[in-house]
Image (cartoon, rainbow, N blue to C red; front, side, top):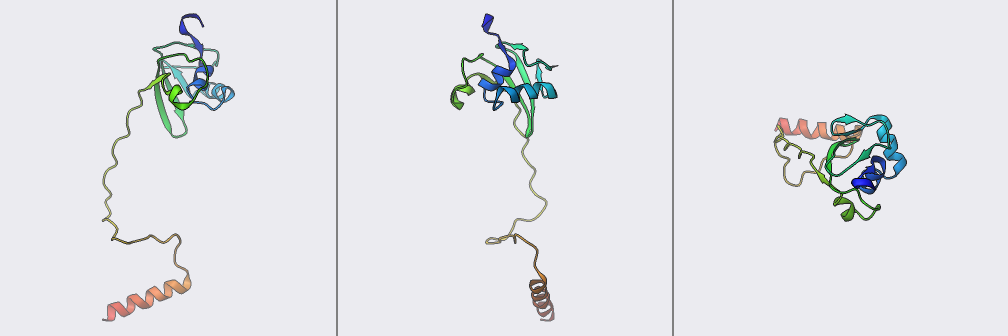
Length: 130
């Protein structure tokens, strides 16, 4: 490899971003990958250490800075050394507007059926009467 350059589809495969090179090529064709803010439509685009990739995945967007071209598709710890993840951390979720559930509460996996609903109605009407 001249100057540490490598095809982008090969790098995505080695870095375990894509499961196969053909899936990496499909990512390029769909416009889901940008190199240094420029859309990539060709899987043969050469990338080098220092390039920043913006990848739109199903669960969100990842921003990766290439540190090393890589030699092979190795185990995940080895693949993690090929890039630095610059993806911002998600913002903390605001507390719920609903009060906390009482201790021991288990939500029902389904709505009550006709028999259970009538039993609840009888229970509630007896409770209101006193």
